[in-house]
Length: 224
Image (cartoon, rainbow, N blue to C red; front, side, top):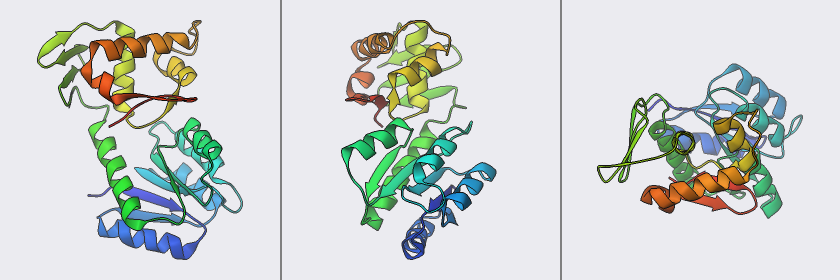
């Protein structure tokens, strides 16, 4: 395993402990101890996952989260904070965070969450021309979807939405973000279009009925 992780945390003792546990799992670990250093590393290096403290000196975690998620091949981001208010969690997910942990941290839980995120990233590689998930088979090049070995007819946008969510598992997307990514920035419809297509995917595919979750007040995510 050579996946690379960046820990952005100003508490050096905590940062070092996280590093010890993650290195034992075989990860390559890099460190940043303030917002400026974290931003520089995010800009200059490629990481598979970032563990990001929200309350940082010089630049806060929200700014770094935006920076990380603006990259073309954006890494997964697990936010850590001493604050666990619902507003903070929702705000983090709206900015693109993949997970959220409240301090004090359990190292065993942190390692488990990191492992799950890395496995999801590998499974969702967009370079795959053939994707198998449970009873679902997606042939990307021919744009064909099979359920239990039977072809399921999807409209072009239903297929595009399904593929986008498969390639970005466990991430919460607002409806307008999905409109931008799947329909295009110049699409003149409204967010109810997303709701309609999600409903159709759930009706047609058992996989989506079970895995395509509504995050109330935010949007949707494909829960793997």
